[in-house]
Length: 142
Image 1 (cartoon, rainbow, N blue to C red):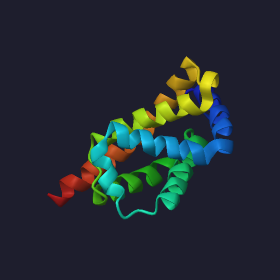
Image 2: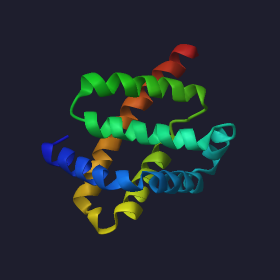
Image 3: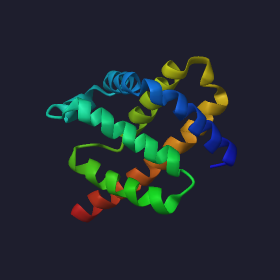
Image 4: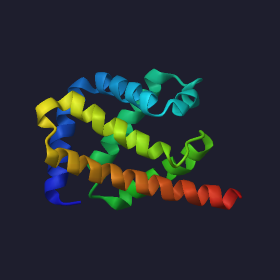
């Protein structure tokens, strides 16, 4: 993660924060379109609270993308917990696609190719870390 990528992610995230509620709605709507098998995982979930958790997790990733000592343990824990929720490895790709689409919709022209690349890098770190922890959890349970 370069300093430029971090600056881009942080500046675009600052533009998302004022429309965070709408962004979360867009995100989950798109996620359920891309991966309909994910929607039942939220059947008994308070979606208002869930949207808050999403935004908190994204904020944590944005603020600590250059601080692995803080970020990685949190992501590993999230990856392990998501196994218990029924999240499968393939779901991470749909989440990434929904995230990028949401940013594109919410930011419009401010979501440049550089911003896409920077956010893709941040989500790559998030998903790789969570997937590895989830895989270790599944392996140890087998």
